[in-house]
Image (cartoon, helix red, strand yellow):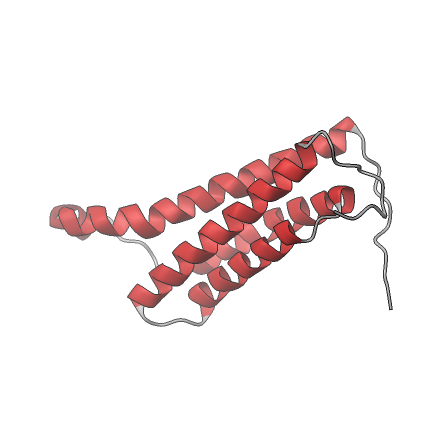
Length: 146
């Protein structure tokens, strides 16, 4: 059974909001990656800083819950216009990894690795969505598939 998404008005204001949401999600993914890779290295290199800076246990779940609506809005809105599936699928895998790392995984090393991979895949999905939205050859007519 085939379902079709409702047609969305494709005006400059809507495209601007989608680009803004994609940009915010890409920045959040980059910050997540910096948090997962650079901050632990910095804290190991500077033991005095590790004693002063503490990251609460609730950071990852809160970060995930903030990333989820931005990503969902940007990716679903983008898909309605460019009809490409892989940016959303890539981002979905990244969000799934981030969710597991935030709510399920207990080991710090595994959590860091899963969060880093999730952030990278989520960023790739958002970049692909942004590129598909701005690509000149893409038809934005509902029903066209790439």
